[in-house]
Length: 436
Image 1 (cartoon, rainbow, N blue to C red):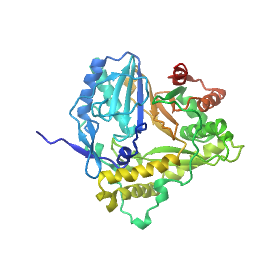
Image 2: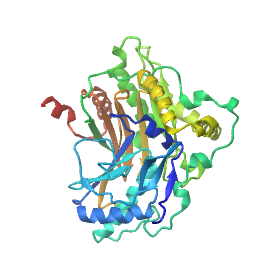
Image 3: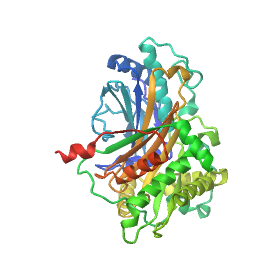
């Protein structure tokens, strides 16, 4: 029997098995709305073919002596009808040992990924290839326009490299900036409110004309990410932060895609975070205050010197000789103690991820309406916020464990009052649970 291929986990992925709990797993989700209903059999054929082209996705998580690793999975990943539970925990049982799932519902294609496999940018490349292959199965021979890794594209080993390791520059232990690695020691503001008492999550999405939003932001001197991130923080402040005694900082984690800066082709994880932190003890803060905090945070973080130091810091922890020789069970014990402290002292209020433009081929436009991107939420960080642009549709999404929707209502009403046309949808999880 031929030996199965295997991959070391990238530097980010190494953490995820240790911080997974019974109720919490770092997942994210892409949903593609098509113009025609999906043929499940043709989707299954397309998935089987696409997985052969993407070896770093056709894997299962395995326990080693010192670290987890990814091993080639020769089973079939079966497409399945979409569940009404958003980002249900991925297990060997419900995904046939794979680290992601593929679902369909009428004209909607949904993929959910365990972050151990890749980040949003890597996942999007896989999805675009799957779409191209699926369209071919339906009889559409669409031009990839050099925007897609097709089945004919030769496999480049750099697609599954650990770019953190490739970009690592040796650093002495005494020069490590631990603050860069862990962030502020101060506890972040947690959005208060009653949470759902099971694994379901509420989700609200809103579609905008992307050019209208971009024009508004340009006229005011900031980017779409600055504006949306600032408005999200402002919405939390106005609906929750003003009414809490001794409020802590609203802290937003914003992923930064490092591929362009470091000329990386990896499909695995290659992002670091900007930490935007707003002190809300003042009861008269403006939207501009929060936008400026987002702007300053991203600009201070997205420079080569800072990122080089951050990569070296994160990699040094992995390369430290004690961490290398500790057996896996001891590492689990260390992380369990660390997780317990983190849960008691949350370091972020939410994550805001703007994937940017999906950059689909023009040939896909008659067949793809939009793509929606979502991040998981957990009891200590009960809300997440995301954005993605497909052609001229900007789609934002809120995922939450909270029963009330005050933050989302304030955010969307503010944009409506500015004159934007908005199309809103919801999974109505709060209504369904009220009826149970």
